[in-house]
Image (cartoon, rainbow, N blue to C red; front, side):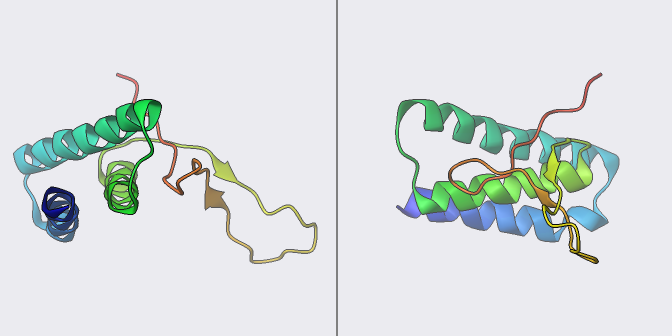
Length: 104
C-alpha cells in the first residue's frame, strides 16, 4: 500500500514541476511516466488493479498526452443540440485514458 501511495505521490510531484524542466529532464519524465503507464497496462492483463494504480496510470496518461506527444481518441458529444459540449478522452474500464506513443 505504501509503495502505491509513494508511486502516486511521485507522479503528482513530477507533473507539478513539468513546466519548468529542461529537455533532458522532460525526456526522463516522459520515460518515467511511460514506464508507469506500461506497467499499468501489463497489470490489467493479469489481475484486477487497485484504485491507486488506476489513479497513477491516469496521471501518467495525462502527462504523456500533454507533454510527451502521446495521442488518443476522443469521444464526441452524442446529442445534436449539445452546443459547447466538450469531447472527452476515450477511457478503459478503470477510467484511465487510452493513449498511444508518438510514431517516430
